[in-house]
Each structure stands twice: as structure tokens, then as C-alpha cells.
Amino acid sequence: MPKKTPKEQGAMYYLENARGILRGIPIEDDIYSEKKPVREAFGTAYLAILEAINEALFKKGVVTRRELPKSFDGYVAALKKHLSVNNGKLVREFDRLYDSLHIAGYYRGLIVGADTVKEEMKAAEAFIKKLTGK
Image (tube, rainbow, N blue to C red; front, side):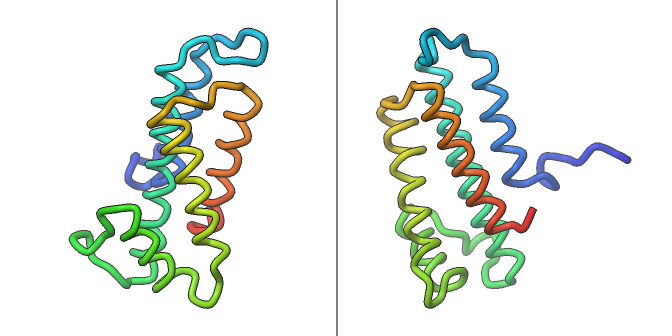
């Protein structure tokens, strides 16, 4: 079986890249010893979340590439309108992942505990699977 291209792998490709970054960082006393690559992994995991939303929107046929959301608020609006009608749970999950992955993990570099990082990666994977069915 031929290897899938990054485009065919989609959101999980990004998440696996994030996990690969983490595998290369030493852990001392349950803390990643280098903050910069941890931040990079969180940024990549957040991109995986956005890619999963994009995939779900494409699959439903509700947007073109040019119509994809371009901001956090745009993604929230797209989730509400097309993917979680009458169910705010998906939007709340996205909001929480935005806060933890993008803001605390990537932008501010506040999360470096190994267990916490791993839990956030699991939460990202669960969200992606919920949207893509993969």
C-alpha cells in the first residue's frame, strides 16, 4: 500500500508531527527540559485542530478553499453554523483547545509538564476524530 501524502493524511498528519517533536525532547522530573520545541508542538497540534475543522467543512460541502475561516471567531462561527447546530459542546471543546493549545501552550509557553502535555495531545486527537471520523 503506498504511503499517504500529508494532504491525504490531513489533521492526523499534523498531530503526529506534534507528537514527533515531543519525542525528541528530554523529560526531567516530569517536565520537558526545553520550552521552545514544546511550544512548537503545541502550535502544530493547534494547526491539526484547524485542519480537522477544514476537512469537516469540505466534507459537508459548505465552503470552498477561499471561504475557509481566517480567524478564531471565523472558526467558531463556522462550527456553530455548519458542524454543531443545536449543540454547543463542539464549540466549547474548540474554545478550550484554543486556550490550552494555542494560547497557554504555544503563545505563552506555560505548559511544560509532561503529563499535562500528553493529556492535551489526547484531547486534540479526540476532537479531530470526532470531526473527521478517522
